[in-house]
Length: 76
Image (cartoon, rainbow, N blue to C red):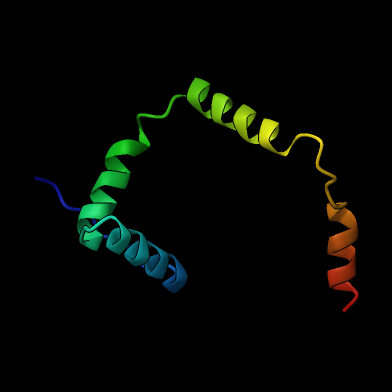
């Protein structure tokens, strides 16, 4: 079997992956193996359906103007 070494991962990403692995009762390595295995199974059609479900969930909610929020943050 092949091996992959990934360098310079963000510490926060590794922390989140470890938490996810623990929640699923798996080792970090097993969790990453599953993530990689599932990564190519999502089709563009599936991604669009998921995006549509998310849009529907937030439909009618007032959204903040992101440009105004960015501007406000930059002015701090």
